[in-house]
Length: 511
Image (cartoon, rainbow, N blue to C red):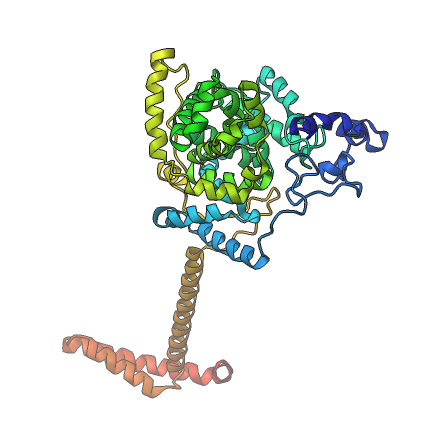
């Protein structure tokens, strides 16, 4: 008998050796009274999984249903490098691409985002980068806040259930579980009216596999507010409403599957709750999860609807398959153990692209089912914000900043302040002013030297020139005044000759 995925997941806590947990290491006297874990490696090493017997796959899984091993088809390195280059170009000119080339962005998401850029691309597609910039420092404040003890107890009990075969979350109290706790606690503070829902934990865990805690938190906020509004609120009214929408759309996609589920009174909430609320992160192979999330962040919730409809169509959509599902229990077992062929990424992505279910049809059916809900249940107790269908709608509602994508390291070394252009121009002006001042001083000094030489009688030509210039400038005077001036001039010449004869040596030395 085939072993179920649930049995594998439940077996993890018992089979894992307790010797490697952070609790046991903290109690070890070799690590000091507070347990110095700074020198430890990954959480899988802490928990004793890396022992040579078990190999970690490229996504960080050491086992379980989502372990990929070496059987997956690899994208050729040269193709991967080309895709990375294209995505970097898009991320550096995001506004232009979203405004004018959104179809190209959509096509590249359908091909798959390169693993090295997936986390950053999700932030841009979801608008979480803009949200984080608008709320700078907010996550740190919530991280330092104590939070509601009621929610914190529930969160702490759920941590070990999230991807127990992934190296980030293997160790109890390990790095992954600590970040997951921080993200979920912050959300209960950010949205106290919603609090915490268990289905948020796997969503946050997937995000943490691709980005740091703060970025993962704001990405979670965008999913809860823009992509799946109301899914995690009390009463789960939004997910029940989407279940009815999905069931109505199934009539168009697979009338036989619709008739079968209706015949045995199998309510959509019984099989699609985990699918939709966890965005298939706990249902499908990991490669398929990543491909679907790439498209989900770009195109919105219609991708989730399409995946659910495809799984129902190929599981219950033919008479041969329904022969083994003669009852509610058998049908539910069939949906819990879907044929792996229908969950492979190549098959799913192709079917998702070809399935003609648009956001217009989803919204039209949403209006119809909401009216029926009000007739039978009354008004919704929780009024979620309007759902935005994908990256284009979010980008139009919250325009992206013009700054290019940059890394956000945890350790920042600030460079010395560079001289501004204004300071450079000011220094240049000061230098020019100083030079002109020096030139003026030199010119003044030169004039002084000339005057002194004239006073010593060494430059009669220059004296005559200056005197002639003075005569040209002066206005005509009367004869008496001119006679007095000539007499005074003769007296001064006699005195100057006497002084020159007495100070001949000093004159030579000065010149």
